[in-house]
Image (cartoon, rainbow, N blue to C red; front, side, top):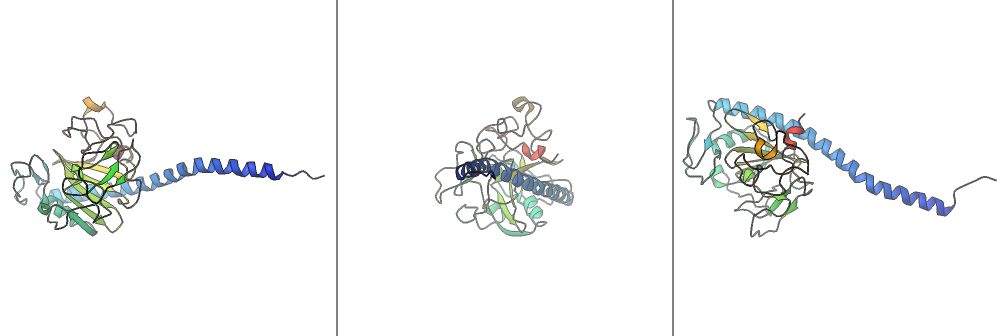
Length: 274
């Protein structure tokens, strides 16, 4: 007599396979997505650094830093008046930088030549919230996923596990390759990249959102030497959901003065380039 599986045994086996697949497949999918996002990040980082160097050289070694006093270092940079308490990338630098990109759409502050503010309900590819826009929020690595905001945001204070974003809020450009580049900064210049824009997930720092810090001398991924406080974060800025603060309005912690504890996931910007 030939032996065979009974119907009950077959159903049990299929059920076990289904349970295992349900557990394993999301992990496999996330790993594949992360590899794709990392590959895109490496490409975008190289592009950002090359453009940064070109624009800086065109401006005589300056990135046109604007501050509360309107201070600029290059004659090619124009003053735009009082920017409040911020020290950030000037419109001159940003506009010249953007001229080297293949732009599909853009939005931002009037000071940066934009007539359209980056309101999340008008621009679905935008994923930050500031005092002039409605809420779209990126997730920190510990939170795990971003969140679309309402059409009438009453506050841009960070919800638990979310990043809102004055380090991204001066101008945003959607590129033809589907990525989004944000320009901002508070006390230092930041160029951030969502490699697949906010219409696609997971919209998380360290997974599909990465950050470059810039000053007069260099453009470095956050997490590299000189981009974070060793006193607050230790000698190594870790790419781990267990490291860094849960939520914030700045990538560098609540003070955003290179003194605070980094936002969870932001240091992956450096480690994923290795």
